[in-house]
Length: 396
Image 1 (cartoon, helix red, strand yellow):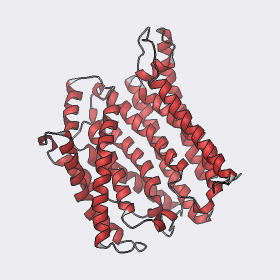
Image 2: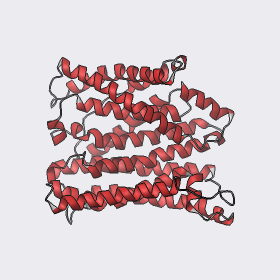
Image 3: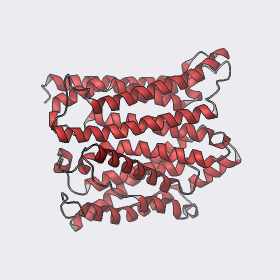
Image 4: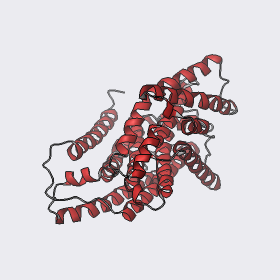
């Protein structure tokens, strides 16, 4: 493979696209900058909620496009990689990135115009005042820039292309970033709403969309009937529930940190399954391939919200118990669901033990990352009695 010119082209495109994202993010958020000469105002309340709602719709478009794309691969037996690369599912996916970029551009303009009138002409000042908008711009740009590299990877690997290919993993992360950033944007204006519960519902929906996008690339090959892709065939049985459980746990913990509501994790889990149900109905109505039921993590979400974590004094101890509670609620449900599938072999005792240990280890790794992500997303909110209460809730 290393002598194949397509490999080096694919690697080159992916490296350049990732490099541009890293350099742009560093320049916008970390490079030295002089203090602003004036005040950079963030988006208004209504504008922020509108932007977040539109990003939720475009995120849902991405999820639907991903499942449609997978279905078409199975129905046609093709993985377009040449002139036919922009077939309908890919057009739906990449047009979503374009829509996100347009939305972010409009939001940036709403920040830039008053900032320039106030004498602030440095885009870095605009991005640092509203980092969520900047994150959507960067992620959307990467989604569009990744198209050539993804096309070459498809041409290189053909029908055996795995969902875990480098461009797919990066596209999944770039796809989820706008949804997570939009949830942070909603959190930043939550205290200004008469009924903050509306903001909580929107944040849960946005986080559920972000989890859906990462989860889809992470485990989709295990959930497509009759696919028997390389990941399905090459890995032991426990890899699927471990990877799926880790992704779900990360999303639920971000929700618990970000959304100041007792049932934040459960609400996010229910929103996730509602999204999957709607997409499955749409696939059935259009005679597409319907994926199997995803791994059920509702019980784990319930324990994350229900148990009195505030009684555990230390952060490491609390996070360790959260991981253990999620694992013990998730695995006994996930394994029987898999055993009910006609294409899944029977779990041996060693597989169950490996699943338990794997989810515990992956959860321990992801827990501090989820805490950091939740804190970063919540970092722009203005301190008020209401948001202070939310901080206490997240600590719990």
